Length: 281
Image (cartoon, rainbow, N blue to C red; front, side):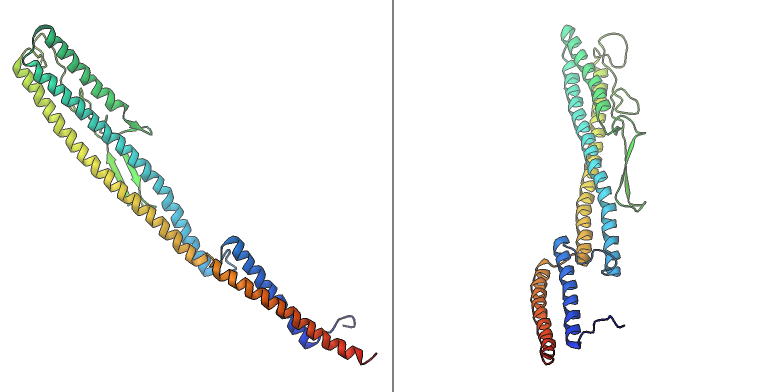
């Protein structure tokens, strides 16, 4: 067109080179400011979506990690309840043993203490809840822990009943000082029977403690694995998208140098046109 400005080949070449260098400088500065080599599918679609899949997986697993962490605390509370009840039961056994040689007011005091401890066993079992779940006062309660989005990757911890009064629990009879009740401590045979109940309860509690301890160990192992897994996923995503700051810094210096040289080259090309102009003066 008549109004178009025609540039010489040298000027146009240098101008295009400067524009390209400016674009590269802008890209490098963006990488340095964001820390990302690939920030969108436009940069590299394959790497971007591979990294996104890894970060999405890491986010899903990290969400499960919180549940594992809470489950560990829940089982720890349960284990502490079992161990505390075991201590109460052992105190009851000591009282029952002492009842064999006691009489009168001393026996009455032992019976009162024995029954009080029995009540405290039930109270402690009922108090051992964590986030609304109690794993020691009913076999109907349970805790399910999810380890990943895979529906098969779960652990279900079934509740137990360690209440002293429950026939489905430790089934320890109350003590008495009169009448023909099974728990009457005036009868040596009945005291021996009570001690037998306590020994059975202690064995039951030890079994529960062992099972719960193995659950805590398993959950801790899964938690450690999950931490490591999430870190590896995020590290893998970073390798696909993160910029090498040292490399990009060096690139910026080189590009700025190239830009200065391009400006100088453009000036030289302009000087050639000015020399032609001077021929007409």
